[in-house]
Length: 502
Ligand code: HEM
Image 1 (tube, rainbow, N blue to C red):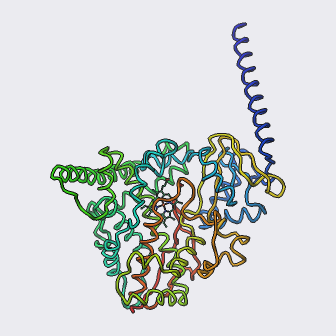
Image 2 (cartoon, rainbow, N blue to C red; image 1 turned 120 degrees about the vertical axis):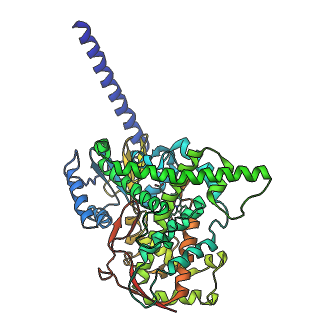
Image 3 (tube, protein in one colour; image 1 turned 90 degrees about the vertical axis):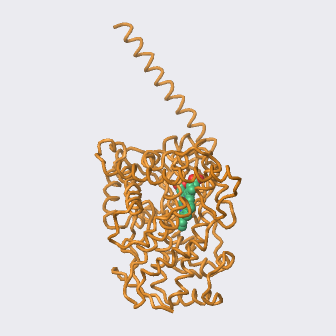
């Protein structure tokens, strides 16, 4: 009894002492960095954050998550505020200086946090899902493969484009371009990554039994399952999920086959002293660098996830706007007219100024990765958000999630003017944004596929401009874009258009 009391006393003293030490060192840190408290707190219910959770559910059902998030900044009259969900402290910000600090200046003080567990079954420790040394190794392995000047294969794009063209009616009847863009990007990405295309554009809608179609469906399911895991959070282990497990197995088996084939071919080429295929195929480059099959498979899955929906969403969001604006379509057609119908070269694509403005502007009003977050792994500081006007540095305790919103940042009227919510490519004539424009992220984890994505999107747009003189929106919602938010964002109602052949 006496000993028990002594042990309890020692433990209590230790607890009080370590708390006091933490309090004093934090007080010092706050003072040294000139931090002031953030007066803006979104939650009314301060522990679980039920009010915010309920509001998020309503916004999600109304397809207004992004608009809702932007409205919070507006309602609070602040670009940075505090909130809490399930007792996790969170700082929400749309302040470019803060975003630069998280992603670049104090990069090492943040990790992905619990995002890892949601992505891990599909993506393991691949580039898109790892932190620290593991991420550095992945980036080191993959970056050289993206550093080539002309990573994208325009001839391959054109083959896939021609297949897509067959699905577009030439009598002006309605077609959903978004559906076709998603097929096009999985077909081209799988060819580029695995040296084998899923060829979904070759199939009819009811051709669902072959292994390519089964993989495409399984990958889609596994991708959506990430979001469900996010939502279930710590309770995810309670969720029976046979379909999810089956989907993962299908994806792994499918990709493993191509990894094994690439390793075999590489070994045969080496033995025969042959240089191998001169086309640029990702899997072939990877097997030259490592023969770790699981590692190659994981990285390929990571890049497929990073690159497929994003490029399809960019094309979809831009075509949603183009279909509403015959004047922009006409201007774009003028830009491609000097090609006289032939395929553009890499250089020509790069020099199409107005097309570049149209893409930039789409990524501004509808950044396809519209929100993101990082987790503070040590006590740190943001340059803005503290004090009554949010202009003083803000203390970020270890364990805080800092959520940043490219969507809200891209619509700030102080950066983009009172017409910030409008699709207006011409604004890019003068615009030279810094961190307030962030579709591809910034800092050491900047998107590796930016060039590939912009080349593919430019190529497909040029080819559609050459084929069709007019585009007309047939949007069931009268041209009001509604968010279809998963890991990326595209139009919830697809991109329904009628096209007139040139
Ligand atoms: C419009 C198209 C695209 C957009 C808007 C986009 C955007 C992004 C963003 C925002 C991130 C950062 C994610 C984070 O750190 O939380 C990212 C990372 C990445 N992206 Fe892209 N992406 C696009 C296309 C592509 C393509 C086509 C590929 C590959 C072929 C690709 C490969 C990657 C990779 C590998 C990363 C991880 C980089 C790292 O963590 O070091 N992306 N992308």
